[in-house]
Length: 136
Image (cartoon, rainbow, N blue to C red; front, top):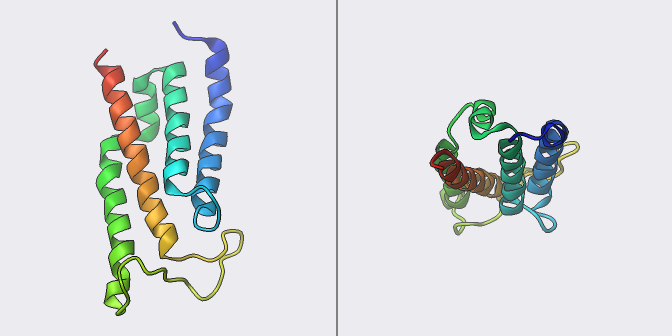
């Protein structure tokens, strides 16, 4: 049974939660937050939408299967970890651009690692939950 109240609330909460998850992602390499927490918040936004509107409708919003986010996120994280090796530094050395970007601030390899984790977390959580929901 679908709830009109939950559907209406989800229409407004989905973009707000996704924006908050992006904020947590960008904030993560300076303060608590980052890819894992941001990915969980983004996953919760899509799970809430799934509860209100059905898994099939949520899959239409995503356009791609969440499983496809996992290798993309792993590749981004792996590149950010190994890129310092090309410059003669140990793996996982933080590399930063010299100029800050307005609104975002300093961008470095930690942000790309967090972005990879963000995509992996969204892919894993949504793949598991959507698989369970579609097999019920």
